[in-house]
Length: 151
Image 1 (cartoon, rainbow, N blue to C red):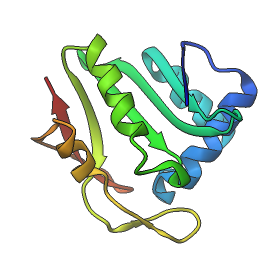
Image 2 (cartoon, rainbow, N blue to C red):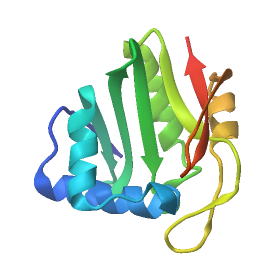
Image 3 (cartoon, rainbow, N blue to C red):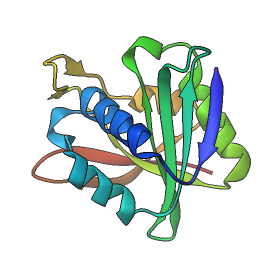
């Protein structure tokens, strides 16, 4: 596995990440290329870690940014690469350079991916990796999430 950190994404990599976002996250969070680009541009102090295998195939994407005086993050592990320790390694690496991390996480299994398969909440993954569930929720008309934090 190759873990590559970068602050800028090439246009081709950004398109690949958009595809993975749309296939791995709940369909209600789906982006088109313009909205995805605008989303990324809205994130302050954005840094990426892209994981590929030895054949340069995409495995995972971790990104972190500043919002509301916190270091927040997102993570997507391709469904074919889950349960191989990649997500855990990404979080361990992030913990080396941050004193606190937070994220908004879907905490139910009520959503579906764009292919119709169930989106399984990653909340148990984060709890196993030292995060706690905060008493703060962010529920919109599209999706319901809970805040998680590590410090």
